[in-house]
Length: 428
Image (cartoon, rainbow, N blue to C red; front, side, top):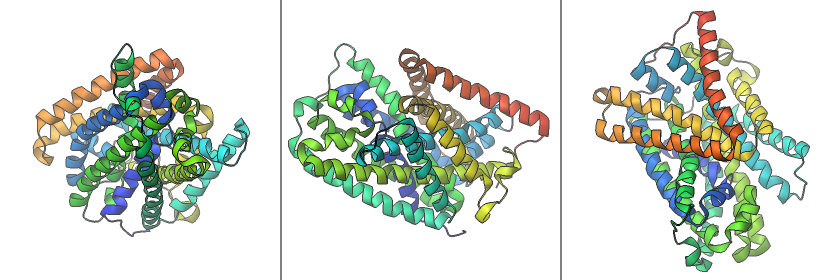
């Protein structure tokens, strides 16, 4: 249980989460919003992610804690109602992400098994994958890291075949960016939604106590994972959009990449990509369960979450692991894919804003240029507003759920703080 992971284990945790977050889960959604501009969307989203990663890398190298961004905010902003609410919100982002991956897993598994995607069948598939990876997380950090390396390796091999064979038949006209009526705004909206695609790099800081030489390996893992994933996102989107008409990508929304492989790989390609998707989403779910349980445990030790999250129960695992998994299942069966994706993206952005603000205040202590941090703050603020506009125009339920989640975190923190009279304890 005390074995530590190396650089490539940490990179695999981040890559596994990021690729599972969009390439297989919500790729069809991106095609619907951005159309032929989808490859450009991934470039824009990656550039925004680097602005946030700049702060995570500097903070993560100097502040080693599995509480990750919440520890950064605590150091930069101090203890208070906002910091406490953000810690609860941070844990909830992992819960919502688990729901997203479970939903994506069932979206690929059921068609592959020729099973009708009824409510019952979908719920059973989501339950099965969450229970399976909860069991893997019981084996500890070393097992999670080794599993990620293997699963990510299989996933990247499948995507490599998809890219190499698909590039030969790409229709250049289909991937040429267009900025006509409505397409420019669609591209910007998609960049806001698909910012979620890069959120996995933050998981590195939620495992920093379990990484060898974190001062060196945490920043390297963050930047390496974003570079690897950006290249893969752009190439895969070029192949998909360049081989399959946008209406067909939209029609096969939850299994869009498998459908995109048919023109150049036939039914074998559909099978290959579907299996790759299952591996991909599994690795994302595995990494997110690990990060969610880690942050719940770390926050409980600091006094931010109730002690039951720290308590050891079955197989000596923190009870927070089970609560994270159970609540993730509840979100999975309660919201659709589009709603889950936009809610997760919005709440992550709020946490990112406060991390960047904390870095701005701590720049002299941990390093980093305030000018770059300021650009990041402004950019994330604009992206958040764009996402809110998109939610309001396309899914009012997601809009209200986003603000309900933010308000609920503040209310829950106020009640919990009032009842327990506790404060958050910083960790060296």
